[in-house]
Image 1 (cartoon, rainbow, N blue to C red):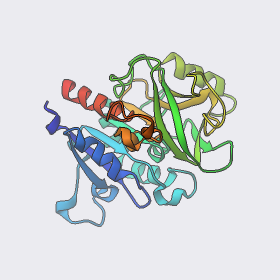
Image 2: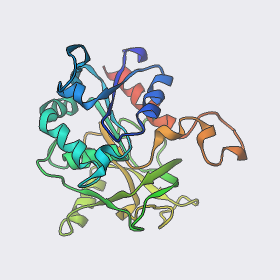
Image 3: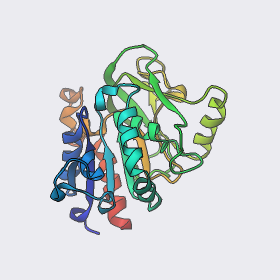
Image 4: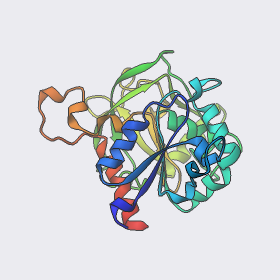
Length: 277
């Protein structure tokens, strides 16, 4: 498949606010993204010509923002609306090893739907985890450093080297990945054993660090995880915001390359799709 044949669904509803940056990240790399409202996939309150079929796309991206005002819990309403009518197509989409990327609010949606961490099934009836309120009890918007610690199980990261550190901004109030207290240690070990931990927050020396380098207090400094098959990635930081080097906060200290750190994630998944479909 050629890159200009790769179709990307960038999904939005009321309150999402990063769909344009996400769209542009794929478009700049030659793919065919489309910003699609959830109602277009559900076939609700729209013209026939506006309806869309999830299975017509190779990549599904759920962007950041504050979908439905993040009422109940962050991402909960978006997830409930998707799961009520799209559960079967979503499961089939994932089983066919098509790519799903959830960033920030999108990560929260995937967790609420029971798609991540996906330890025992593609989509669990109930969430297996939660992205809880930051330990600081406030919204954290800051540059963060992510260490890549996946052994290439994740199909989004084939452009990265193990141990590579990326500077990717975080902006969230609920990003602390927690599991049921009685199972927390066991589930974290399963994630590590399954090679599902993709990114961890680190400090400037590349070592695990607490606040503010870990902006939410997530156990194990987890910043992003994938499902066991590696085709679903959820991460709290925003790679679409650092597609170009000049959108990094330190770009004035030297523009050694025009490429931003987030670009590699979009390039990686497009390379995978063009090689495998």
